[in-house]
Length: 436
Image (cartoon, rainbow, N blue to C red; front, side, top):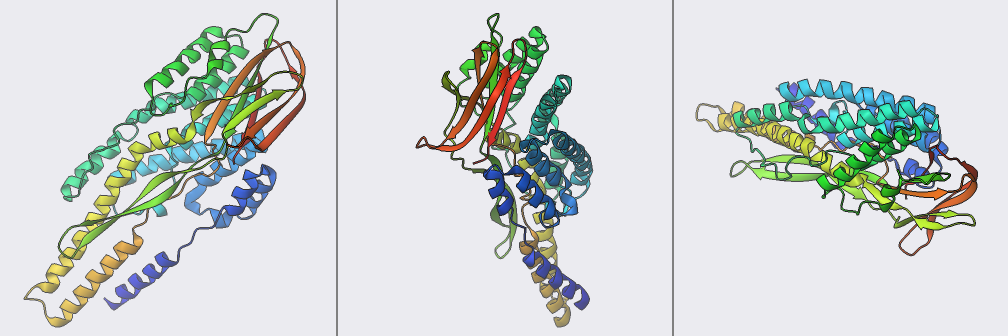
C-alpha cells in the first residue's frame, strides 16, 4: 500500500511538472516569411517540440513550412508521410476507443484533425503543380474529395460504442448540440480541380468542378458566409487569343486548441473533472489582398474559403467522441473513489484500514484532478483563409505585385514577380502566402 502511494505521488509530480516547448521563435520566423530559417530551427529543436507520439505533427508542420519555402519535393514527401501516419494512428485509435476508456488522449499517438487530413492534399496538389505534374495534382484533389465524403460516417462506430459504455457507467450522454457536420464539399478543392482540368483541355470535368464549387457554397452557409467570388464565372470563358492569370493567396493561420474545464457534481462531496479541447482562432491582421500589374490594372482578390471555419465545422464530430470518452473516464475514476469511501465508512472496517482507504480515495481524487488534461495538440502552419483572383490578359511577359494590407491600408507583406510569362491555353497560377 505504501509503495503504491509513493508511486502515485511521483506520478502526480510528473503530471504537475510537464511543460510544452514554445513554438514562439518558429512562429515569429514563419510570420516574417523567413521559411528556410523557420525550418532550420524547427529541425534543430524538434526533440523539444515533438514526442514519439507526435509524428503526425512533425510531418505536417515541417511539410507546410517546406511548401512555403518552395521546397516542393521535400514538402510532398513530408505531407505524404503525415497522411500515412494519420491513417495508421486513426486505425489504431478505432480499436482503442472501443476497448479502452481510461487512457488520456495526451499519451496516445496523435491522429490528426479532420481538416488537417483534408487540407494536406490541397498543398500536396500545389506541390505537384509547381513541379509541373498536373495529373499528380488531380490525384491529390480526388483524395481530398473522397475524405470529405467519408467524414459523415467516420466516427459512427466509435460514437455508438462510447454511447453504450456511457450508459453502462451511468455517465452523461451529450445531446450533440452542434448537430452533424455540414461540410460536404470544399470550394477550394473544386477551384483547383477546375483550374487543373482546364489546363489539360478537359472542359467538361472543369465545368463539373465549377458547379460543385457553387453547390458547396449553397449547402454549407454556416461555413461559406462570404459571397461566391465573381471571378468564378470567368474561369471557363476565356476569349480566344487571351491568356488567364490566376492568383491564389493564403492568409493568416489556422486555429489552435485551448482547454475548457468543467466540474460535474456526482454527490454532496464528490465531483468529476472534465477537460475538453476547444478551437480558438488566431486573429489575422489581413483585411485585403490585391494584385497590382505593372502598367496595368489593380484588383482586389476575393475570399474563397475560410479554412478556420472549416476546421471548426469538421471538429464537431470528433469533439463529441472526445466528450464521451472524457465523461466515461471521469465516471470510472469517480466510481473508484466512491467504492473506497464507502468501504472506509463501513462499520466493519477497522481504524487502520479506514485510514488507508481514505488516503487512497483522496489520492485517487487528486490524481483524477491533476491527470485529466485535454489534448491540445494541433499543427500550427496551415493558413486561415484562401483568396482568389483571375484576369484575362494578352499573352506575354508581365511583372506584378501581390499586397497584403491591414485595416488601415498599410502593407503587411508584398510579393514581387518579375518578367513572368503568361501563356495562352496554359495554367498561369501564382501562389502567395502571408501568415500574419
